[in-house]
Amino acid sequence: MGGNQVRRKKPGVLCLHGFRTSGEILKKMMGKWPHSVLNNFDFDFLDAPFPARGKSDVESLYDAPYYEWYQVNEIECVHFDECIAYIEDYMIKHGPFDGLLGFSQGGMLASVVPLMQREGAAFTSVPKIKFVIIISGFELRELKSGPPKLLANVSSVPIDCPSLHLIGDKDFLKERGLTLLRSFVNPLHIHHSMGHTVPKLDEKGLETMLLFIEKIKEMFPQELETGLGLKSAL
Image 1: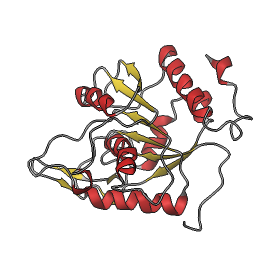
Image 2: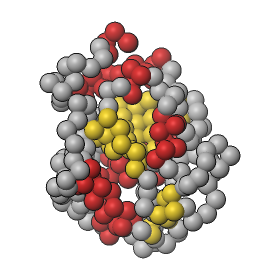
Image 3: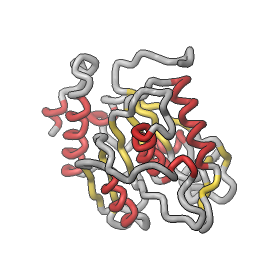
């Protein structure tokens, strides 16, 4: 284990941003969530390993720099194995992390980490991921060359890892996000009226989010006993 690991008073969550954005951008996007959600986790926002190789869709909203995890064309997924190694190395050096949060491309990555752990394909040098929060995530589409090497022999049996999925009615990746639900046992999901974004939480969405947090708190009874009283916020 790396020497930079820290003891956390809250569950540590590694956050993986979307395609051609950044950790700082994801942090700003999540800033619209209330403190009754954000104050329950110790978030760590990681930048992807590769500088953006093209125009970012968020240039008019957020400043550079922009990064990407991997690239996909009709034939193959490029740099997938490298980005997995990069994330695992960061988790070794800066963890431990209890959960993952991912938006868009980062959501796809967050969804496969517990799966790869179960199969022993990757992330075997870090503690088991206990939960995931996936925002506008999606299942990787079929490619002519087949799945990335690290996913080639991974079982499609749903993973028994608590998961919360935020899916927008106007999201162009909505159907692939709904398909991703089948990768998890008993997933919770928040449907919102927006598109491919981190949404504000309406009353129903906030209620679902806080119920998920209560479920997570049960895994950390001592660490979180001084945290916010979530039931009073429902």
